[in-house]
Each structure stands twice: as structure tokens, then as C-alpha cells.
Image 1 (cartoon, rainbow, N blue to C red):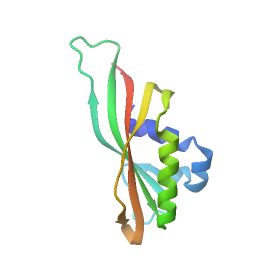
Image 2 (cartoon, one colour):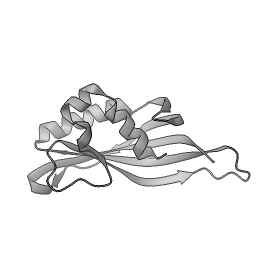
Image 3 (tube, helix red, strand yellow):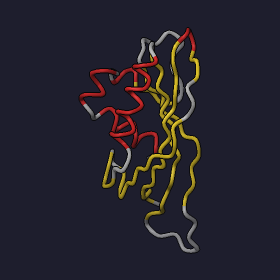
Image 4 (cartoon, rainbow, N blue to C red):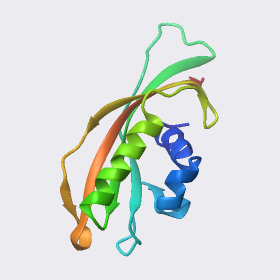
Length: 133
């Protein structure tokens, strides 16, 4: 399990977001050059697991996850960032098959020009969860 999979599960499970960004345009890793906009790209920025001297049946993992919004207009970019931040920020519980998940916002990136005159911005999250050993 990864933080990307957890955040992806949250995003794909929200009907209002999926109306604006269909599930097939919520991707991990990379976006194809010719993808229809808007689209979301999820990536792992970093991953740390808590080091115990004696490892038990689970260990705590904290992933920093970046959700890049690529849109055809600045207004769509801003609206999607707000939706994503509200959907994921502050969630706790068992999510997407992961145990004892905690999702916190971890900063919004700068506005940048994306490919083919698109608008792009990232929202980062700190995703902590228990991983089976």
C-alpha cells in the first residue's frame, strides 16, 4: 500500500469530483501527452517508515503525496485544488484498504504553465498509515 493509492482511492470515490475529472483521468506516475483536461496526477514525493528496534506485525509509514491538477483554465485549476484539499485534508480511519490512515494537507505548490498551454498546480498531503510487516 502507498500514500498515492490511498489518496487515489479517496479521489476516485467522490462522485462530485469524478463528474469533473473522470476516473480514467486520475492517474499515478505520469499523464499521457494528449490527455483530455482536466486531469489529476498523483506522485510520491517521499516515504518514511518509523524504525523500531523490534519490528512487530505492522509499522507506521508516512508518505508525502503530490496531486497535480492540470486544467484548461485557471478557474478550473483553482476550483479543483479547493475540492481536492477539502476531500482529503483531515481524513482519518481505514481508507482504501489501509489501516489507521491520517491525511493532512502539506502545502499547495505554485501556479505553473503545463504542456500545451494548460494550467497546473499541486496540492501536497502527508499520508500516514500502518503497513503490515
